[in-house]
Every structure is written in C-alpha cells, then in structure tokens.
Length: 457
Image (cartoon, rainbow, N blue to C red; front, side):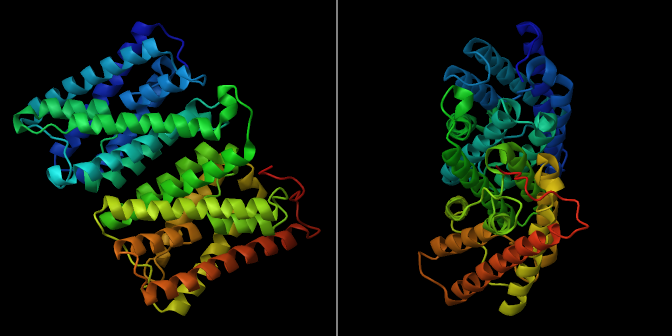
C-alpha cells in the first residue's frame, strides 16, 4: 500500500478524500437521512480508495495514518513518521473545511456528541476506541501485511468496516471513528459551546495504537520476529470472535432496521483480514466441524481445544463489553419459541452453515469463504430470529449468556441457563454431523474433492 507519488500529490489526494468524506456524511445527516449515514460513509471510502489509493494510500483518517506510522516505527510496514505528520495535519484541515462547507450549505451545523451527553462520554469514548481499533487493525492486515493475498479486496474491506463501525457505535457515540471528522464537526459546531471532538480523537488515537499492538501479535514475521503460529492463531481467533460478538450485541440492542449490515460486515471483513493467520473460524461450531472432517488434518485435539477456548473467551469478553457500553442493556438468551424447537433449529442451521463452508473450493479462497460465511449468517439470523434468536455460534451464545449474567449482577437465571445448556450441545451436534457427513461424502468414488489437502495448514 506504500504510495509511490511525490508527497505534495499525496497530500492533495488526502485532502480531497477527507473533505469529500466529511462533507458527504455531514450533508446526509443534516438532510434528514441519518439512517443511511453509515452507507454513505462506506460508499465514499470504497470509491475514494479505488480512485486515490494508488496515489496516497487513501487513509482519509488521522487514526489510520497514525497506525501506519506507528507500525513503520517499530519495524513493520506502513509509512514514515514525517509523511504521517503531514497526512494528519492535512486531514484535520480538510475535516474542518468540510464541516464549515456543509454547515453553510445546509444553513445549520452538525455536532458530534454522545447520545446521552456528558454523562455518556466515557461509554462513547470506549466504543470509539474499540471500533477505531478494529478499523485500523483491518487496514493493517489487508493493506500492509506482507503475506496477505486479499489486497484486491482492500477497498471492499474498508467499506465493510465503515458499515460495521458506524452503525454499531452510532447509538452511543454517533459512530465517528475519525479524528478529522470529530475535530471538524466540533469546529463547525462551535456555537454549541460543547467540545467532545478532542475526547473522541484521543480515544480514536488510542484505538489506532492498540491496533498496531494486535497487528504485531498476529503477524510477528512482518516485524522481523520469529513467527509463532500458535500465538498468532489464538490471538486472531480471540479478536475475530470479540469483534463479531460485540457487533452482534451492539446492532441488536440498537433495534435498527439495518442491524444486519454491520453484522455481516464484521464477519466478512474479519474473515478477509485474518484468513491467512488462523483460518478465520471465529465460531467454535466451525472449528469442531473442521476437526471432525477430513478437510483439516492439522486440527488436532489440542489445537481444536485451544481454538474453542480463544473463541469463547472473545465472545464472553464482547458480551461484557456491549452490556457495559449500553449501560446495562442486554438481550435475553431465552428463545422466542419453545426450547426444543429452538435447539432443533440451531442444530439444523449450524449443520447447513458448516457443511457449506467445508467445501474445499470455499475453504481455499479467502474471498468466497468470507462471503459465504457472512451471507449465510445473515440469512440464517433473519430466519431464526423468531425461533432461537439466530445465533448459530457457541461464541455468540456464550457472549449473550455472559452479557445477561453481567447485566443481572452475576445472578443466574434458570431460563437463560436452561437455554444455554440446550443451545450449545445443539450447535455442537450440528457441526459434528456436518464434519462427519462431509468426510463420508468426500470419499465417494464420484466425488472430485481431494480431501488430503489442508486448507488451514
């Protein structure tokens, strides 16, 4: 992703991209179409990345520039600190001018502040930090990592992570994820007398630095260190499960009519970013399916157990996080239908999900693997929403259980405990059936799949 153009041309590119991004988002909100703010944010980033990526790298965000600079400073890929500082200054100036421009056009300013005012500032800063961290982490993995073959998806991933972050964080903080936007909107809204942009920006910069730390953990070889496959794999599975379950929780609690968009975006973007690191399971059911099939012989019992623990820990931490960010709100694990029907539905859909993903053609391609997983989770979630809450993942189930437990002061509910005790075995059963049936069908004389190859080795 390193730009080859002169610095002056790169700065012009960053100014134009950041200006258009902030102007578009502000204009959409002020025109009364706030629901589509996340979509407009994502589209501008995709188009801007395709148009200007080869000139400047298409950062359009001081947090991304800082993450790239920090990565380069500690021996990884990215950009030198000198150009990074110039990028940040130009992006902030562009954000301020864009805010003044749409304010003059619409004849009223737009402020960026927590939905609950000053009392919700700490939660707003936390969600901004977490999703800016996810944003920068994905940029580093898809745009900077040496052995990542998903570079053709770079602009697509940037758009997806914008959808994920803006819609998930919007109910708490407004979904900024960009210091240029935060500071620009603060300056444009100076008549309001309340300045949250500085707090947002500090949280976002902290998120960017955390992203560099996680990037170094999952790809140590990019920093001249010895590659530790096991550590990188487990951190990858933890982070992927955390981001997905956090996004599920924040999206469902927002009760937004477009809640499915950030959920599928989180699954696809994290899968594209980390497929080369750990196989991007992020779901204990999928891990069990690979282990019980002949598709991944490297999934020994010990490795499978470690994956499952990492995924459950990620889901559990995300459950605590989204309840804390949402000030104690949670959604119950209890099914909307009866427990038996919900368990059977989970088993059937987990079986279908795992059997589809076990196809060698999907497992060998990061793009198709990510798309198939995200699309099926979206459709399955919609179909199961009135039966079992549409989880299809023990990590999500465990995250929901931990979130409800935290919200209730760690007092166990008999109904939720029963639901948890029935859902997890049902999901595991579906994954085992998928793994074994796939192993049997792959050995059929008419089957063309070569089951000895290990897509995750």
